[in-house]
Image (cartoon, rainbow, N blue to C red; front, side, top):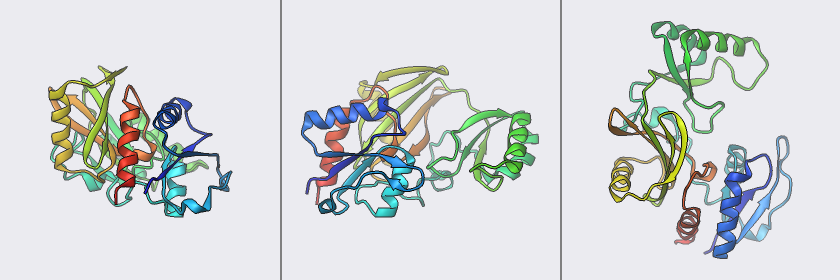
Length: 259
């Protein structure tokens, strides 16, 4: 049965949603726009006859709404889209990560001059980034006394920073890589569709080892001339680089329509 895409129409970068909308129009796939409000959720109602046979695409806010309403094609599981679930994956870049609260990280920071810190969960309260030990302690101290969504009890993964040569994002549907793109080269933005068969095969081999869901986003890095997985993210809220969005939309629609 054909599913309907639900595309977030506000509070999200149009550079993410527009390529998908254009691809869906070209393919003749059904989609609906929804606006979001921070307090009430959906600003406009969806056709009730769709009965949850929906593929959401937008921000993590839309993902949470899809969770609440039980939309059928939200490809996300809180139990597996988290650092401590994929830690056993043999090819994770930050295999040395330690899970702790932000308040504990403030204390642990003294052991090393620099740290990479990111939330344990995928629906991130903040983006992962490298901080000096002093910056990390100062930041956490501000959070502990401030009035914001992030608190000292937030669970984070702390690991040593790595020198990364190249980074890719792969969009995976049904366990198979559909399209990939570089997004950073030697620390600088660099978007180029990946077409090299050997590179794609190496990434597929990583995906074949373990995935948090058959449909997901997998970020990969070349570090010390070895390819490793940086992280997995929810496919319903991923960003596009120089991806083949038409191929992605075709594969995702077919996966959702399969019995």
